[in-house]
Structures are given as structure tokens and as C-alpha cells.
Length: 205
Image (tube, rainbow, N blue to C red):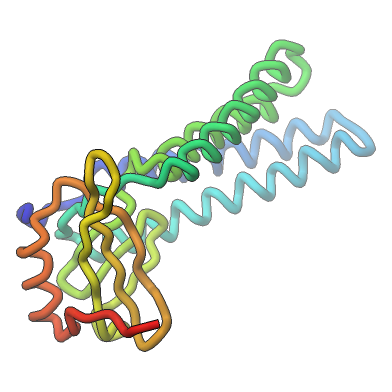
């Protein structure tokens, strides 16, 4: 398994997203002042959405900085997830380009393109989707799952081509971790999880 290191790529992504979406939210609010009625309301709603994405990246950034040294558990999304994310991205890019082409609401067009790029990073796992720290797991949005919150784990090879390793972990009948890993030293990860006190046997049912 890889040596723990600072999650530079994930930190850079969320730092850039934080700055971009905060700036976008301010830009959208300013742009809304030149509009009226539904258009102004839409701009303000999108500004709130931009602030929400910025908040997600801020939470992830703080969590990653607290984790410090982590091991990246490289993963791949399912084909269904890829198709869904690509579809949403295509719609956002199309809307963004059309809005920018009109030249009247550049902030709205820029937001659509920024959100498309953010979804690409998160949804297609260009940003590591799961990290292993000394205390547990950290996902790409900063959600921390400590080893103390888990009781069991399962590592199983899938029938995909190329084959992946399915990692599942939970407590009782509650599933907390479920991801498809690639290029994984399963035995090394198994030893880490067993040392952390987890049982290498998922509950039946």
C-alpha cells in the first residue's frame, strides 16, 4: 500500500473551488441587481447554490487539512454514475455556452461551466473519492468515518473488466463505506483494518 502523504491534489481542487464559487456567488448577486422579476430571483437562487458548493468545498478542505497524511485509495465510479454525471455536465456546458453567447448574464453562464467542472472532478473521481487516514476514512467531500464507528469490513473482487476490488464497511446492518477500488494491495489494506479493530466478515443478509 502507498506511503501516507499530504493530499495535495484534493486540497488544491477544493481550495480552487472555494475561491471560484465564492467569487461566483458575489458576481451573481451583483448581476441580479441589474435584472428584475424572475430573472433577478433566479440569479439570487443560483448565487445561493454557488455559496452551497463553496461551503461543501470548505468543509472538505478543513477535513483534508486536519487529516494531514493520508493514503489515496484509488477508485472508479460505476458506469451508470459516469453516464449520469456526463449527462448533467453536458447540459450544464450547453446552457453555460448559450448564456455566455448572449453576453447579457455572464455570471450565470460562468456558474454553469464551473459547476460542470466541479461535478467532473467529484463525480468522475478525478479527485480521490476515498482516503485512508490514521483514524479512519475521509471521502472527497470531507466526510470522516472513524474506525471506531465501524465494526466490520469486506474486500471482494468484482466480475468487472478490468476487475475491481469492492470495499464495504459498516456497523451492524448499516453500510457506511461502499466503493470500487483499483490498483489495490488488498492484503495490506486488510491488515490495516484488522489492526484498527474491524472484523473481516460482513454480517449476513
